[in-house]
Image (cartoon, rainbow, N blue to C red; front, top):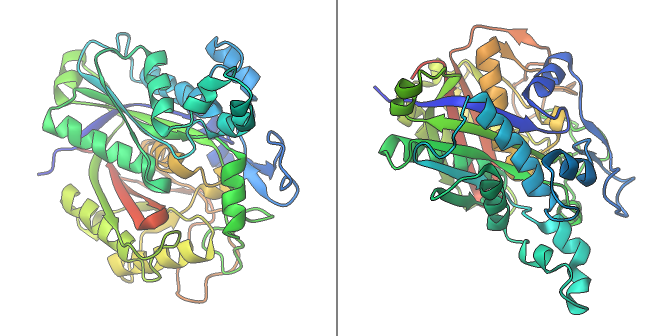
Length: 399
């Protein structure tokens, strides 16, 4: 029997809330976080819609007691989510066992680097933000703020599957005995670079995103951070810990189909789901709910839909995408949707796939469009990234 990895804490900040409770309240009341751009000065601010975190950088700095302009936005929102996860796990001494941090990001310190890029030629006054561009810098800042000492800290940057891969790697390290505890997830803030990049790809929507709808126009970029605390059986027994859920299975695959598009037949997604089911020692019939990647782009939803049909046949379980609430939060997506998956298990609910009206012409699949009560034992969550990097996590109430 596959040994699950215990989840003892969760934390999140997104466009629909600054903590777990606020996010859950928004999900069950259908309160969305999508709006016009307000916090970034860009020529595209009236052309697209995004999922912004309400707090401005000055508010984040005050909340975290940081000096003005010391950190970029990505590590700040990451700290908030990671801190909540640690508190939720009831951890008073983060260094009382072998503890690590595995954080996914793509933006890193880009929001500040792009702000001060041209100052680089004039002097060193903002050198901390030039050197803070790298993805790893944000993970180091989060680890330092949390007080991790002599610990394992690393960064995963595999586009939109980054946080899911961070969770997978953390689970493997708990299983192997390399760590007793690991904080896993991801964080990404909005930046001009990502706005411009996705604008160039012509996959951003000027209205609310509609996953799996035949008339979907593209994604809404979002920013968020989501983290889980994973702990070993030894620590669960030592501290008599409450377990929120278990990571039962995980899988990663790369279809190598295209730099920015998934295989039209969902080859990478199929491989990732097959691997996760194998690790979990579960059959497709055992999955109660699928938290789909569902970006609302023409390519992704077609690819993922076909992959679901290849895995589940004519018995596809209830599925929905929560990106209509938060926007597509890039590297953080797998982290915040892991939090949503745990909450779904705890509360036995399936989230609504907002804005869906017209089924896709390519197949007969329809997501859940209303909040639904259902006894859940397992939730499968997909996260697919550029370059064909596809990841699947399976969450369960039982180890």
